[in-house]
Structures are given as C-alpha cells and as structure tokens.
Figure 1 (tube, rainbow, N blue to C red):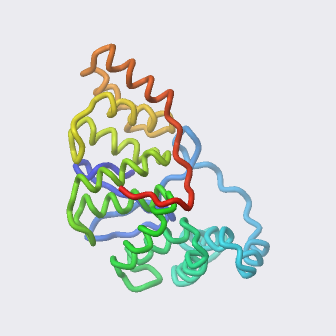
Figure 2: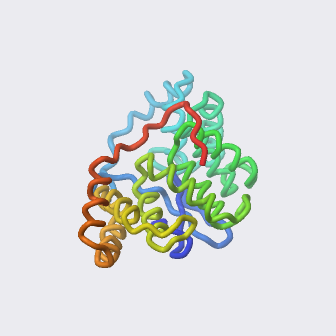
Length: 241
C-alpha cells in the first residue's frame, strides 16, 4: 500500500510488482469501495486477442495487463511492452502509464527513467491519475527528477482531484504535516474523508487523529468540502502541476 515518503511506498497502476532501489512497488489496488479486490470477470481471451490485433487500444491495454499479471496467459513482459507501446502510440493514457512503469522497472524493456518520465507526462497531461501519482513519487524521492516536495505535492493534488483514493490519503497527510504544502487540517480532513469513503483503511484511521485536533467549525467546513467534491475526469486537456 502506498504512503507518502515519510511513511514509505508508491504505486504501479498496471499491477506490475517490481523493485527499484530496493523499494517494492506493489500493484495499484483494484476493487470495490470496501478496498477488497473484486473477483476478476471471465476473460474471452480469443476475442480479446482479435480486438487487440485489430488495433483496439483498450483491448491492447487489457491484454498487456494480463501478460504482466500472468493471468490467462503466461507472464511475458516483452509482449506486454509491445502491446502497451502500440496503444500508447494511439494516445491511450493508460497504455502510456503502463509502458512508463515497465521502463521504470526495466521489465520487458531496458530500464530508462527518462523514457518512463516522458510517458508519465504524456499520460498525466490527459488527466491519468496513476501517471500523476508516479510523477509525484519520483519528485518526492528525487528519482529521475529533482527532489522537490512542493512539486510532488502538486502532482499528488492532481491525482487526488482525479479521484485516486491513495493519492487522496497521501495528500491528506501532507496537509496534516505540512509536507510540500502549508499545514491545513480542514484540507487534511477533507482528503482523508474522501479516501476513506473509497475504502482506504489507513485513511479511516488517520482521519480520527486529525479530527481530534480540530474545532467543530473546522470539521463542519471539511465536511462541506467533501460534499461538494466532484472528481475530475480524464480528458485530452493538459493537466500540469
């Protein structure tokens, strides 16, 4: 489970588990609001391959993810990279993020942080929250990008605004501790509430601690902001920190 760097962890949207600088990068969790993984739907592999071979970008991404997970097909990171590359060339932001993660890890392609960052930025510009989170973490760690907690917080903010529960949790902690942003417990509680509502268990625990330090008026304002929150949808418009 990813946390802010003070607490450790990061993300891999495409469910590729790998190690970078001795740091385990776990799969980005997929599941329902409880935070539990949802049962995988039945896969019509022949039909999926036909669609991917026919140039369907979404099918290429889905099939590529299966190869990174060894689900219904053998593990094959080279084949995954090829599928992600083809879909990324079609402008698919999820494919750009997934291919970036393979370059980040050196799985199926030579390890190349510059290429990973380029792909993350292309996806982030389309509003892909996973790519925005990955850029945030790289800024936080100074890995491939200059270490800059302010810049990291801006990327985390974009990912959180896109509805990413783990980014919301991380951002809530940043506002609580004043890491890369001014301390703001109203904003901290807002983001922790939003993450908790999506089943982020750590956020549910953390918000109790934050809430205990706040006045009734501050809590009410945070709850008002939670009620007014509408996640930003991914689009082709540029998203820059």
